[in-house]
Image (tube, rainbow, N blue to C red; front, side, top):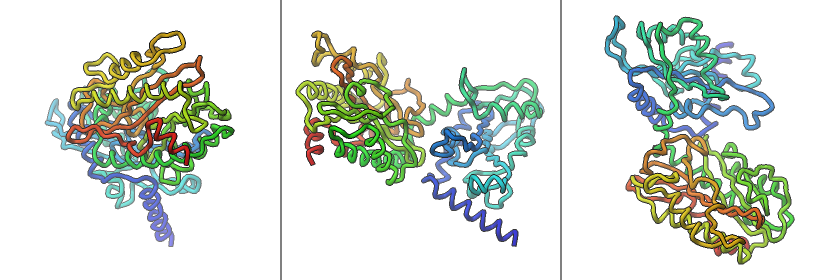
Amino acid sequence: MRHRSLAIVFTFSVSVFSCALERQASSDYHARRQALARALSGGVAILFAPRESTGPNDLYGYRPDENFYYLTGWAEPGAALLIAPAQDAQDGSPAQSYAEILFLPARNYTEERWTGPKLGPDDPKAAETAGVDRVEGLDQMRDELAKRLPNLNAKILTDIPLNDEISNSERPLSWLKGANAFPVGTSYADIRPLLSRLRTVKDAGEIELIRKAVNASIAAQLSAIRAIRAGITERELAALLGYEWGRRGCERPAYAPIVGSGFRSTILHYSSDSATVHAGDLVLIDAAGEYSLYASDITRTLPADGKFSSRQREIYNIVLGAQEAAIAAFQSGKSHLLRHQPDSLYDVAFAYINTHGKDSHGEGLGKYFIHGLGHYVGLNVHDPGDYSLPLAPGMVFTIEPGIYIPEESFGVRIEDMFLVERGGKLVRLTQTLPQSAEEIEKLMAH
């Protein structure tokens, strides 16, 4: 009876794991691990998933570490991953074949009453379920490292925290060092630059998940735009956004929603969302959802009255013109996002803003464009990536010019998401969300 009960619990555990997030095929994660192994230059990669926390700040529950999830698709806490490339015999150590091992903590049935069932390392189908070559218990990690590492001068790549950072690896690495898991002369290097470079280009499965996040967020933006009126509160709009993308499968917002009206639309990371929208305000909505851990990022700026004033329309059209100028200048394999780079799209957008329109003092508007033009989007809304590379197929990023004029109590930002397709074509993933002033006014009239 006890074994039968455990089997039922395990079956339930697998079903919970399989339906919690839309996971890509195991072969996709395996391909990423092999790509990483080829870049390790003889080193061994060790990554750790965060432990489960049930503190008051975990509003949306446990979220996997992005790099760990990128390599494994594994969404449960407390695991560890070892990736070791094939090695020739050296310094008295035998030759080694490629190895990937997912280490899982032993099941704690008492804790699972609070946090839900987990997959244990002793289950005969653990490797198949997790989609890795091998699964071992976490308590076997020390012995596996001792067998895998050379006798001297091993190189370990892991997430090494910078100042004031919290690292998943800090405590377990300290324990492993104390347990003599690493040979004399072991060196440690930060694995994150390697993973950032790999994450720069998205595969087809990632792009599909990003599209789902974008489409759910477009629907949410449309609902919020239709709801805008004088007297509504920013918080009502933020709540409506969350409801709309949530009912379309997003598990959480991709970042703290920004709903800023009037002067608050000039505050870039305004997140109080606590004021009331007044007649004549512009309402800036920078809000989007996260679908199966993949983010989206969208901004629209709307008139509370359903019609832009002449000055609001002037500035809005300049911002839109700057985005269109950057899009027109794009060349796959050549353009860059950051300012002062070769073929910089930022420089194109800035030049457009600074040569169209004036402020109340008769000066150019470039000084009111106070942030970058765009950033990569993926498992993080500001996804790590190699910005030294030109924009090329498989890259997903935003183009988001803006003008913020505090003395006139309004700001305008237009932010859309873009994908470079395989043939080099630039595609606006947010194509179905109205963008021009005329389209927005028409939408708000219905």
